[in-house]
Length: 72
Image (tube, rainbow, N blue to C red):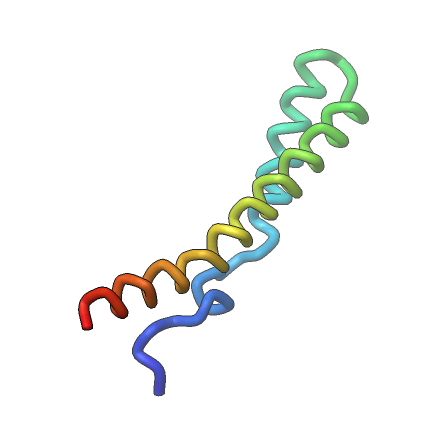
């Protein structure tokens, strides 16, 4: 058994950023009275947040292993 969780186990809900982005987009769309544009903006925001988080999750194990190598 591994003591360190993998990146797949760290991400419990992969679609949470898409949902959050769409919710924000709907709010923006309601404020400017154009729900369709708001949903499109929110979807783009959600994809960007999800992509950023995935890249961050991939980089984290490398940083941890580099620190362990320094300790040795």
